[in-house]
Length: 308
Ligand SMILES: Nc1ncnc2c1ncn2[C@@H]1O[C@H](COP(=O)(O)OP(=O)(O)O)[C@@H](O)[C@H]1O
Ligand SMILES: [Mg+2]
Image (cartoon, rainbow, N blue to C red; front, side, top):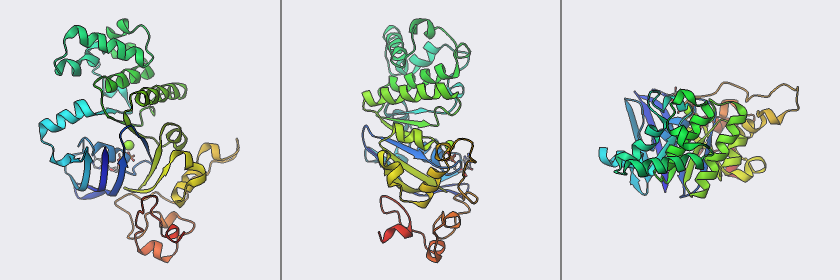
């Protein structure tokens, strides 16, 4: 359904994505993990062309086989309001603070010609589906009357309301407290799985990605270095960067022991060397790793794995 085909992105001449290749099947959940600045947000934003001014792309993003860069304004609007929904980190940045939750939820439906009574009925049902009781009262409330967790559920309800086929969730729980995070992720996942909506789930939490997703794509410095089934995250991680990330998780050390981090300084797409992006931090790097860029073989981009 969704296909990134060697997507490269520059903003004002600065390289941001350096050849992202990834597919998401209908109904599939794919996690996108990696350190801050690795290009996760830009990757999902390129699907709906929400890129900064001065952006230039090469390669393609295709939705249902159609290159999104070929969509005209109407086609783009249709994709954003019908096929693809987005959930961002901070729900308060998305929901208009002076209007009611009901207005927020019914707006898109009303734009599509659904009558007021029917739109309100559907909005109330959508709220119950994301676990918000007392839906009718909530419809009359304003964002400041709801906690961050409740408001993010409202955003998820809105995302599901138009029957999308893909949800792009960019760190949807990072701004919430930990107990609320788990509930919100569970609801998002439960609802999208029940409707067989595909999901791209951005998080820096590998465990969370593995719990929610079918497959995990690991990004580093504007490229995908490894893609693997979520169930194989621990036993099957092949790329040295993925293994380093796994070793730096809080759960990887005994309580009280010092957290390990991935040694060295993160590269960005701008500073990426001619060879492997991870070579300067990789404990196994050889001379060719610094000189020749490894080819992504559908599973990982690493010279040292090619012979195996
Ligand atoms: N509006 C922007 N203009 C130019 N560069 C940007 C902009 N937003 C982000 N970037 C750069 O793009 C790179 C990737 O950013 P992003 O996709 O947000 O990373 P992530 O989501 O993985 O943390 C970063 O180096 C960041 O500095
Ligand atoms: Mg981001």
